[in-house]
Length: 310
Ligand code: UD2
Image (spheres, protein in one colour):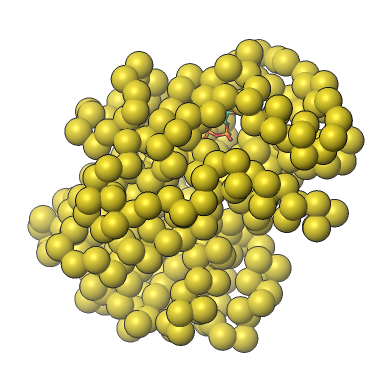
């Protein structure tokens, strides 16, 4: 099969591309390398087609979609706090860009678009775990942008018959997550601080919790969501099903590093939700999703990977 992966040079994208290549599929990557990195594709570079460009460029996305059976649409601005600072930029990439992808996929006759949505569409509801029947109520521009992407996808499904599936990722972590910016995922920041003898920063009291999900689980689900017939037009949670506080993750990292974290506690971040946990039963039922790697094992593998990159 022929796959187009937008954002395929990024963290989740490049891990997905590796698996697609391993399974013998033909892969095109579209990435503007704003967050992605060519080094992420080093081992598969000869086996894929790489197009450097952005999803906000209609011509490029049209060209990239041509001949594709499946589009895995992962290109996005992924940071919640960055969306609070720059809502317009987040909207241009996540909303306008997604609309471009949907139009191009429709016109190219692709079999299905699988869209990287986010648990942030649920907002800060007290109900846990979060399930797909709950009304969306995002509290950040980022969450709004992902919800709008889902809504457009559903409308394209109904109106134009474009098959579309949304996957609501819950805090994905693992090898290749870029720790280099204040907007980076918290575990990549904690791990590299602990590795390099620094002090992790905690925004708030550290008792906020997330359903941290190891990237390999998401990779498997991305492929299942492409291949499983009859699930078009729907949205599914993708998490581990558990809930881990930041303080707990630091305790585990202290064990790996063999030293105390001496974390610095600061004010809570704007746009942050308090707790997050996925009900993953719908994805299990619809396409056989089961997280293969639990949080603790995933964290250990991620720690080992960052240590190997020093
Ligand atoms: C993550 C994803 C986002 C979205 C969302 C869904 C990233 C970068 N963002 O947003 O795309 O899918 O999950 O829930 O993966 N924190 C610290 N210290 C730090 C960095 C963060 O305490 O150095 C806190 C932060 O204030 C928040 C928590 O850790 O309470 C998680 O932050 P994050 O940026 O890793 O992820 P989140 O949930 O904002």
